[in-house]
Length: 147
Image (cartoon, rainbow, N blue to C red; front, side, top):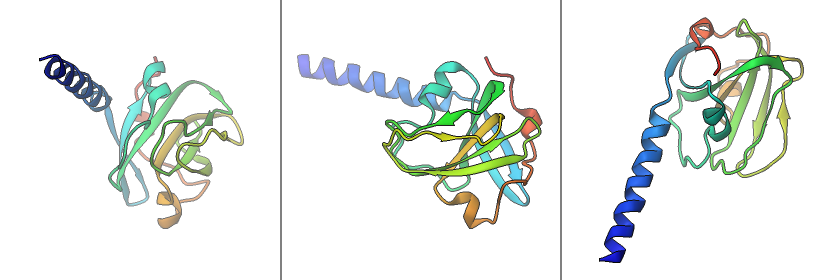
């Protein structure tokens, strides 16, 4: 009976974690004719967790980090299982720089100049589509204010 109760409790916690990830607002962005379905991490808690512990991500899906202040924000990959590319964006949605990040590493990957947003996509997503610094993402003005 104890194993059943523990199993039910673990399942409840897992389903709560999945729900919490799914509870982030979604925002549709585009880079040229490339559509992006971005989960929006606009709270401290969502920014801290980011894409940690996920095993896969659909090709058109990503995560937009909305920061309260422009700064040379840095990203890292602790507890992140999938390789990612991150584009740092200014307040108008123009890509400043793109960095490639390997899973489960703690190297800092930083904006080269103060950025307002960071968009994480599967590794190589930007390069495979010819998206480079200077490209403007459409839809960024719909991003919620950071909390």
